Image (cartoon, rainbow, N blue to C red):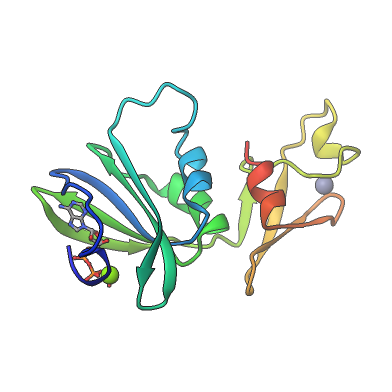
Length: 157
Ligand SMILES: Nc1ncnc2c1ncn2[C@@H]1O[C@H](COP(=O)(O)OP(=O)(O)OP(=O)(O)O)[C@@H](O)[C@H]1O
Ligand SMILES: [Mg+2]
Ligand SMILES: [Zn+2]
């Protein structure tokens, strides 16, 4: 627990995951990716939004007694590419990972084009090519439609 968090009071967790350096305002979307907004949450979760850090404002999500898996990390990378994942054991950071922007994402986001074949009752799974940039862009491999920002988080499967 250092620097930017001296001023805020979040109780240290014994075991779990701290998702740090989330672009400010994105914490709720991270919670959605972790399926933690549906009322069936069992873990204790603390969210801090708009915390001052050396690089501006950020959000932080702390999940007790859960270590976030790589599928979820890939999803988080789509909306919070700057995030760092800190695995906490016995109150200490034992592992620090960056989220990984995949080259392609399949069955994670739905195409925004209602007429896309991936939205029809065909055995075709939505799949996108990921284009990194100031903002992540997803390009549908079927209809070529581009999605970014809120379009991505609004269409998470
Ligand atoms: N036991 C804990 N309970 C809750 N949060 C913790 C715990 N240990 C560390 N953290 C938080 O996890 C994040 C990473 O901790 P670390 O000590 O690596 O900080 P750091 O050196 O600032 O890392 P970074 O360079 O990634 O910002 C920080 O936000 C810190 O407050
Ligand atoms: Mg820090
Ligand atoms: Zn499409």
